[in-house]
Amino acid sequence: MIRIVLFLIVIGALSLGVAWLADRPGDVVIVWQGLRIETSLMVLGAGLVAALVVLLLIWSLIRLILRSPGLLSRHLQHRRGERAYEAISNGLIAVGAGDIAAAQKHAAAVNRLAPQEPLSLLLNAQSAQLSGDREGAERTFRAMAGRTDTKPLGLHGLFVEAHRRSDHVSARAYAEEAARTAPSLGWASRAVLEARCKDGDWAGALALLEANARALAREAYRRQRAVLLTAHAHALENTDRDRAKAMALEAQKLAPTFVPAASLAARLLAEGGQLRKASGIIDKAWRANPHPELAQAYSELRSGESARDKLKRIEALAAKVPGHIEGALATARAALNAQEFAKARAALEPYLAAPTRRIALLMAELERAERNDVGRAREWLARAVHAPPDPAWTADGHVSDHWLPASPVTGRLDALEWRVPVTGMAGTATIEAEPTPAVPVPIASKAPSKDDEPLNNQTSAVEVAEAPSSRVRDEAPQQMPSASKLEAKPEPIIPLVHAPDDPGPDAAEETEPRTEQDSGGWRKIFG
Image (tube, rainbow, N blue to C red):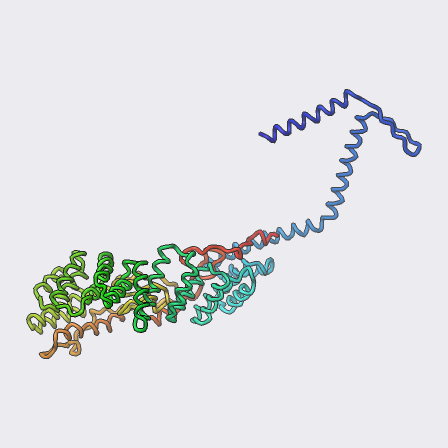
């Protein structure tokens, strides 16, 4: 609206000026080289305007002629950029679809049209990976790592390729270089953190976590710091107990329901006589996550305590999570130690219809201790061999007897979970060149042999409970892949990348922030 008003004002002013000149005509006389020209002022003005227009047209024509080579070059470059854009787009689509021939065809076209563009290098690398040319892919990623604008992307690709050939030393070197180049790269920080965890460098892992704290969500940061502090406290427990105690307490404050931190902190506090604080820590963690480690730590808080007093405290602890199997198991164990066989049997009674291995083992020990009934104890031992497994610390197909801060298979931090192995494990689908069907070996397929009979007239109640557990522990891994098999078989190709800056399948679960080095895109090609 304002522009229209201004336009009308300008037109009105020009019209008033022309009308003013028309009302006041005058004569103009020009004498030059003996030539006399007489005309009116209006005619002279019109002639000057016409001459100016002609001069502008002539200048525009001359300028167009002079600029024609540059205009033609820019036009051809624009067309070349459009063709390069089309080739890169079709090439990435072909890579995602798994069309090797089309991907190589478009990669060759891009090499001819825009060989040094970042996206053309990425297309070359991915087409090489798709066709199985690992050397070509690594060569392209090295070229990208040698440039400033594509260095993080090239290092990520080299990191992926090093993992594929199981060269963990080179993979760690690439990750550390990427972390130094761009600290905001999540995959690099995670890889370096996992490598330091594998080496047991907990101080270095904590320092790296602090350096990348801003890139993590608050809860994720607190959880990871609690895990690392707990691992460091375990490492220092035999050398510097005061420092280990401080780290365990900090970890427990960061994650109050984290079982390993709570049990360690309570045990170290109990050694210093702080029984009330230790009991409060176990109580809080037990209410959220009833766990046998917490029950064990709670029963051992007071040294020199009688078995009956321990039973009373364990019964009070189990009552805080009524109906939970861990409470029943803790009560039954404490009752057995106190020779309160009726209480032990009553605690286990609700779970005898479908007992797990620990329930069956406790029942075998109970039959042996209460009635000296070797036959019934042997029957429960046989049921323990075939009973469903109990929860254990599990990660990536590996079952551990104790908590570990990182997965022993992949090195992933805080990977172990307390759950039933195999049956409770969420499997991950993997694409392999030649899939091999897995043949499960059920525990129930093994019949008891003479070696499976640990009982005789001299067998103690403790031996009744412990003997089958070793067999169960030896047989359970038959149902799951070993760590070496999981680690030694990488995927044959990199799946479809969903974004141009993602060179492989090891992309971060959460989206990584883009850096200025990722910019450029099509505008640079058209430029």
